[in-house]
Image (tube, rainbow, N blue to C red; front, side, top):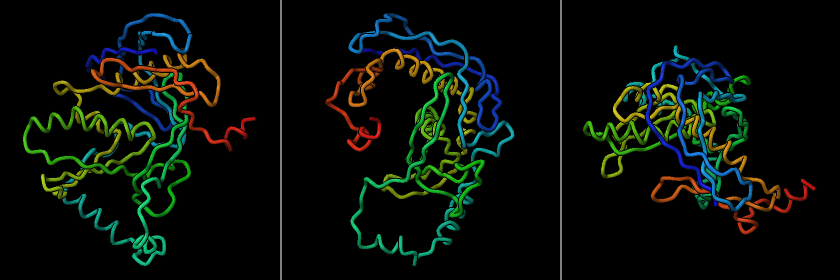
Length: 281
């Protein structure tokens, strides 16, 4: 089993400048710190990793990138609710696809996914991400296929400064990371009361979220997050050495949440279908 231990030290960073398809100097200079250790390439070995200096750039095919002149990150709650109502009014209630669901059994395995190729630092990878909804029924522009995608979230209504701080430090970090990587540009958050009723709605632009928390006490930093992910990929490339489509590695982050563990699982968790394996032959 291998493990990577990272020091998630907080750091402030200057303004970032981004272009379509290529992140430049993302949030300034920062890096993750970690313990360096064994370079043994045995899949079952223990190792510690890594010192990752500098900024990892981010590029993405067919996704959005917004610069410092992007629109404001939030809009008025009432405006958000009215915008959602307008979307509902445009729905054709007689659509056979919708009416067919009335008496059907809900299949929780069904989902709509977008597949994107993303580059973090020197690591390029393909990822699939579930998409909750779209703001327009028509297809987006070919040069920006993800522009209409929206991620839906819920959170308990914020009633004091401590809850606001927790929301910004923890919830917004998760919301940003989940939508940033696949390139979903908009997140709509419904704030619910203790009875589970949504009492407020707020819209966030994914690329604007880091500015909402920057400079605040205990704030997270996007550059540290991205550099850690880049370092993690570099670590995995050294650890995952068995070239067998039926073999798997298990990556876990478990209590006490101080290290990410990588374990060679062999063929016991193989998930690729026979059809896919035959296509590789």
